[in-house]
Length: 338
Image (cartoon, rainbow, N blue to C red; front, side):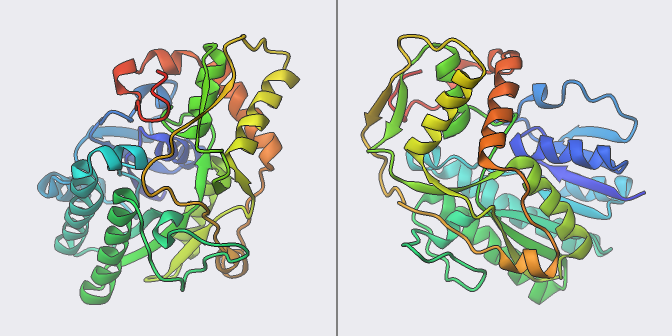
């Protein structure tokens, strides 16, 4: 039986990945420091003998090595990160601590442990910066990060690559497009809009809502990560995307359409409100995922229409998810409407 560590396992992608790994009958150790976006509700229903949780910060190298010794993992999926661009603009310190120093300490733990563990380091398409039409960034595109968040992730990618080359650790880097789906902390566009619709609030959209992102359903991303463990080549990086680009206003309208299709009442205060844009807001992200499609035989399956529908269903049927989060933790940058 394969044994996996998932760092940041109470977060959005991490909790969905853990569910997939347990479904495949693997043994899973969830390492999480329980920061603001980690939600125990995300795994509240998990009662599985193959699942273990340890509250540990990846910056604690000694504890990480001890867990390696005790758990003897075959692989690590590193999803421990601060990820919200707005928060990185307001204060970048935690992004430096967790996304750069945290990865450094994890790499040092792997180096000192000596036994081979395969690291899947999960990164973002934002490292490539603003991509003008009709281009799509492939794995050979230069890094041009334009926010403290993307700069921190770019730095961690370079660190991982350097440890592969210098210390011969076994690692693969993934650069994924915008994820959406169940269990995402409601500071990101899709869960924020869904929350506001459910609670009869205004829908804040940056500028005119024309910024374009490539959207991938979280389950498709998790399948890709598992593929990287079993078939990804050491030292390689792989883009993971759906090829589906939409601007933000289109996404908001698709969410409203999903509520209407389900005959869920929409309150009178639910109206789109354009708000002042954030500093340095990249206009378009778009990646070329042909490498993982051709070499590893992976392709995203979920359509945007079905993915949005399933996402609305989950949040509407799991409103306790929101009640587990203090409103003080909701970011206030986007329209300051919380």
